[in-house]
Image 1 (spheres, rainbow, N blue to C red):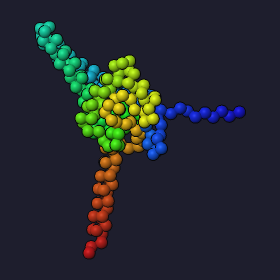
Image 2: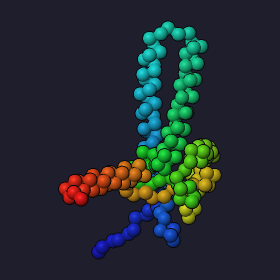
Image 3: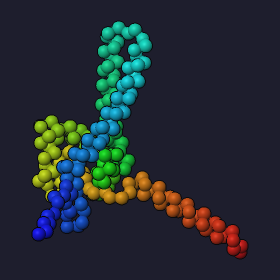
Image 4: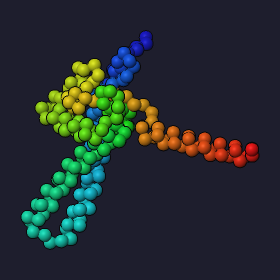
Length: 188
């Protein structure tokens, strides 16, 4: 007796063939990103702590340094997401899980919209992560952050935008070199 069941998928396709990414896949990508963000922050904090420990500073100065550290961490987290979303539409976690964040028109996010989406992520998380639950009920798998920033999260198997661009440049360079060699072999 053979049992065949279709595994539930975190991605759904609309009639046009676009595959939208669901909550579980996004959650795994976020965990990867959080690990990377915190690893870098931990290394920087360890280095800064070692340097500061060499000096005998008053407690109020240490408090200011701690506050600056917290502010730097917040800027680092925001910069991480805004930078990756506006550059390629993929953070490293998104890349591992093979999806990309785009505008609802299918274009790359501009920094302002990426910043809006980053702020909307915080708003979606505040009411016990209820803003993320919308992805379970929306046909395009949009959470509160996607609705506020007018974005969609789509499947992106294969090359990133940066890799595709590099590959096109390499192919063009190889063709140019090949045509130069062909012209050198056959003088006019």
